[in-house]
Length: 66
Image 1: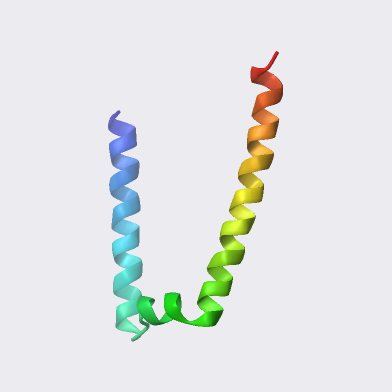
Image 2: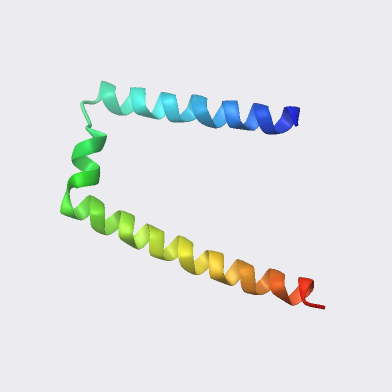
């Protein structure tokens, strides 16, 4: 459980550092997310993650189903 908490804290810290870095360079997350290119990129990323998830589930079901 301690390792899980440390990993979660590490993730939160890196997200915070990323947002600070973007703010330092004047990059707006809202502008990126609301732009047509940003939405297309997020849509494509979600599609890829969905395909990877389905491949992973299919792979795991081969072992669980036996």
